[in-house]
Length: 458
Image (cartoon, rainbow, N blue to C red; front, side, top):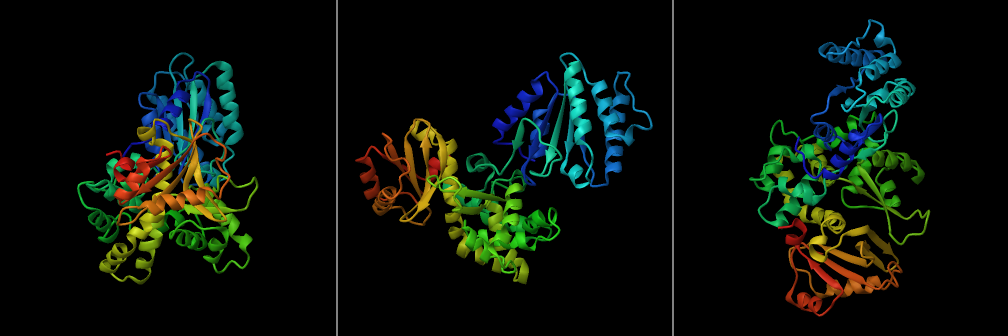
């Protein structure tokens, strides 16, 4: 698994492990987000017991930990050993772990990977674990327990809690195919930011070749990737798949999501499905930055571009088995429409993490604005206090003056940022800018143009 773009999360885990007090940490994220890779990177050089919890009943889970812990204790120089009855009790297992933990400068870490399986087996692990950690704190023993698994499904939360999502575009860009910045953006719209998917790519090959090798050839690794995400986690994935298929063509409000699941007769019935998809990191729920508290005006979007791509292009192709050429033809015809729907999210990422290269400051609040008379792709507040409003345009040709004029009109329809001393217009374009727009922006102090080169950081 590749490791890139997780430096903040890596720092959080390492800081927690360096603390002398015993602690419980958690790392969650969707499949393929690189949870295990992050944990191993953070714990390099630290004594670690790493157990992947088996998908078995609770007694078998205790036995697995007992075997792993017993082998580790037998290989060590300490006097702590497990007896034959240790596997009958979580308390005895965790107690032995605390007994073996050092009391000076060294640290011992227990990693329970796929820890959501403990909750699935209804393992009574919470109270014994909390009691063991409390005893470790009292006795000054340096032990940390790290739970790794699906978000929302761990038996107990940890502090700190690290939640991984898809890598943002700039972090994923070095692993993406394409010689030009615009090509990299298109590749991200196809393959997204999950490290498990990015590891399958060959940056030296074209986007079309990578699509063929990962989705079309016999035995291709991603041919069933979209539905696998659901069938592994849901007993009845059909309604979840219907929601993702609806959102694959762009973010939508509650009404359109409900229409995409025709066997649900009332709109409220879709709520638990959306909530579960959000918990698993597959769907994002967004509100306009100027929305009133408790507003029900929300938009829903697929969190990772690859999932949207798969449900838009791969799922229909699999349904009727029309052949690889039919799939490739659909991608050639509609890919830019798909990229146009992903591009605003890439631009929001840029304002949050990378626009410092252009204006010396990043955003501290970022999102979108929509309401009567306006629908602004990118908006927020910079750390300098200035408000910004952005339009993200993905077309074959360059953006012109009308793009700026239209943004100005829509800004006048929202109260967001009104009264702030500085309000910045930011125009993003995948096809560059016309000379007329460049001249118009050059005459203004409140406008900025960002093309593919600036977004990629070329």
